[in-house]
Image 1 (cartoon, rainbow, N blue to C red):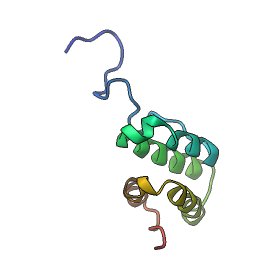
Image 2 (image 1 turned 180 degrees about the vertical axis):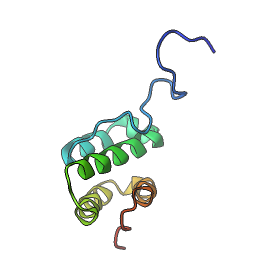
Image 3 (image 1 turned 90 degrees about the horizontal axis):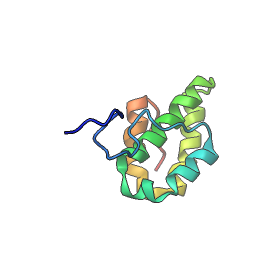
Image 4 (image 1 turned 90 degrees about the vertical axis):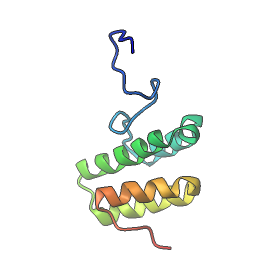
Length: 97
């Protein structure tokens, strides 16, 4: 591998978890609606993880965050399995069936 002075994360420049800044529902919706989200499950994972992390930093409870994630999961059902995994990793309750 040739190193060109830039950080190489193995994703050809695409986002990896921890490298996406998602502060609110609107930003999450915009990010999840992109072609990058459709093509890259790690990007989707990073979007959800950043969203949860920022909500926790803002002092929201796990239940509040979970309720807001329910909306995103209903809006983007094709990413439900990824969102469920991120929820579990963050210690949030599962989305009601």
